[in-house]
Image 1 (cartoon, rainbow, N blue to C red):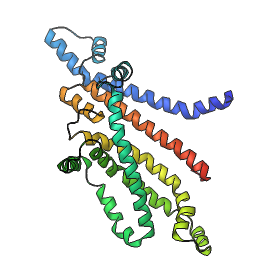
Image 2 (image 1 turned 180 degrees about the vertical axis):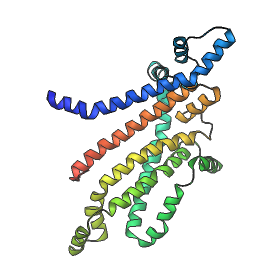
Image 3 (image 1 turned 60 degrees about the vertical axis):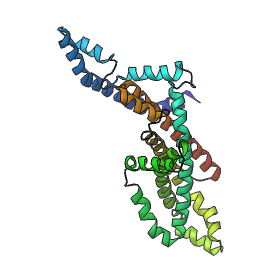
Length: 297
């Protein structure tokens, strides 16, 4: 890559991202000083000592159980639990991420398949369009935190525990954006192109395979980016009501039990990074598939 193109790419793509990250870090540090200062002043009052502003700031950056951990504390915890501890250890965030990722991927695959099937049915059946679509939309108005425990209990009563109940909750959250996006994508071909397929005496299946599905690919992958992120959220939520001992949800739960805010934030940041990686992988797959199909993304 030429130097000029590299500088342009850096200026257009990297600098805005770096500027936003720096802004978030500044606000995060200011929030840590503000929220943790009360404990520092209380400790100084109990000890009968005066606390200068510089000492107060230094103490807010190194408390063991701060209200809001500073970014460097979270980064140090993530380094310790990801790099320094073996991935097979139950204290490793990689181990817990793997547990959550397995149910996320299973739920995402099931949710994507369900969303595509529902979308094809809705596009080709006026009855399904009028009867099913409102229920699909209504299903997403129910708070997942309210129904997740019931789903876990129902599966447990049938002797099904472990991976599948969490994957089912992920599927519940991820099928909706895929179904809505696919419906829009399958209906995106121009009326002129649909008329042309009728002129060719093409069957519904041929129209679906040769016209509707290629046109729906950009919509599908955009929906999948949303769906995979919601799948991860569903998997974490599914770990909360079960009192799970493994998974990012279990780390969040254990951190809240013992007031380990640094552990909570490190699990949150790991989940965010995991979601970003999954979205990037889908974006790469999207570019590859649409390029092979000659579809403009």
